[in-house]
Image (cartoon, rainbow, N blue to C red; front, side, top):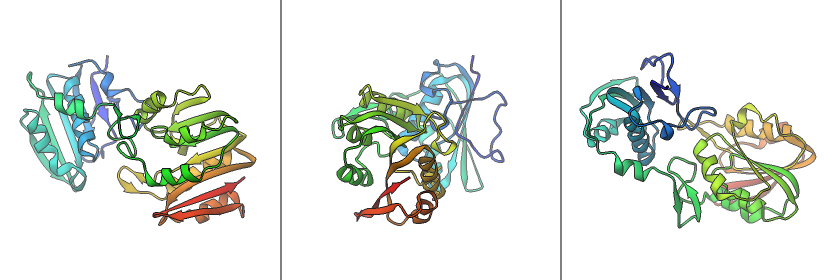
Amino acid sequence: MVAHGLYGLPPRELVDTASDAVQVSPLIPGSEALDMLPDQSLDSFTVLAPPGTVERRYVLAQGLRALKVGGTMTALAPKAKGGSRLAKELKAFGLDVTEDARRHHRICEVVRTPALDLSDALTAGAPRLSSELGLWTQPGVFSWDRIDPGTALLLRRLTPQSGAGADFGCGLGLLAHGVLRSPNVGRLTLIDIDRRAIACARRNVVDPRADLVWADVRLGVPALSDLDFVVMNPPFHDGGAEDRALGATFIAQAAKVLRHGGKLWMVANRHLPYERPLADSFGAKVKLLAEEGGYKLYEARR
């Protein structure tokens, strides 16, 4: 039985967490699912609250739902990334809040009361079928409420693929739909670090040629090798901060799983200097196929 829940990786110097706390962040592969914890099953819950308003209120509401009456929640976030609104959001659920400020974070503590108003937050942050996208989606997933312009560029320019391939950072599965239009694709492995993205993609991509994997591409995917192609629109934010090493690592991992002659199709924001990582992994076999709308599209051959 789970007694203590932990969402994310809050700085240890700011809050103490129970040694037996169970991780429930969807961005940590192998974690438990917060929304699957039974009602009033936790003695305590510590959450590094996400920056997005709808996502944050959903996570707070799910944590409160899972807390026992009298249980304690500690919620914190950087002041500039939702922390300044934490106390107000918790009070809106009908709670008394104790607030502290340290190291540019706001830290709030509440005790779960019997009667809480959580329904609006739970509904607003839940998975839903988007009429605009025609896909299952959920707040917090990359580009959850719109088609990312970089992905759109890659879809427009992508030629029909064949053989076995992978979609690194698959998100909701939009790129996979484009890839699987080709009857010559035999297998496509969709990989994402976000459990919610994989859950949505599983509903969006029902093609039997698709395999879905909840994993961190940065750590490698041992089951993949000798692929004919990889497609990707790699992330460049980690925990809300820009991290250019993310894309460079995606490039290196793509090179590892491609066969000799296999191709990488990659789109990235124009300001990101990925030419060097591409050259390091693919040598001179890199082409800039398009540069428009603030994005660059590359093809690289192994």
